[in-house]
Length: 115
Image (cartoon, rainbow, N blue to C red; front, side):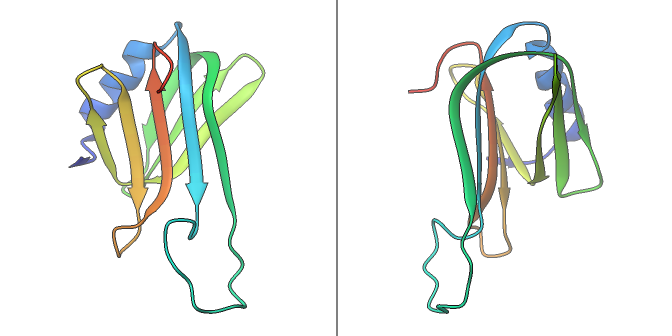
């Protein structure tokens, strides 16, 4: 993955607008890391292959970034985005990593379901 290039990410987000797309959205504050502190509260959210159509998508901020997708009845957003990739299947992969490189948030957009 590369560090976010706002122009390239915004162009990719725009290419998926007004199309049926599949969304993968995931947040975690430690599901992929081991915590030895029993008082630490671990939380996360996960949705995969949600079929949506968004009319507007934007990346904002100065880094880490926020990506919002305006859908018919509201918004989908991910905050804390630091890296991106457009893979060989033309999936837009957005991720936010903490200072130790652990995944904190992921937002992926595709015209085909994720495996």
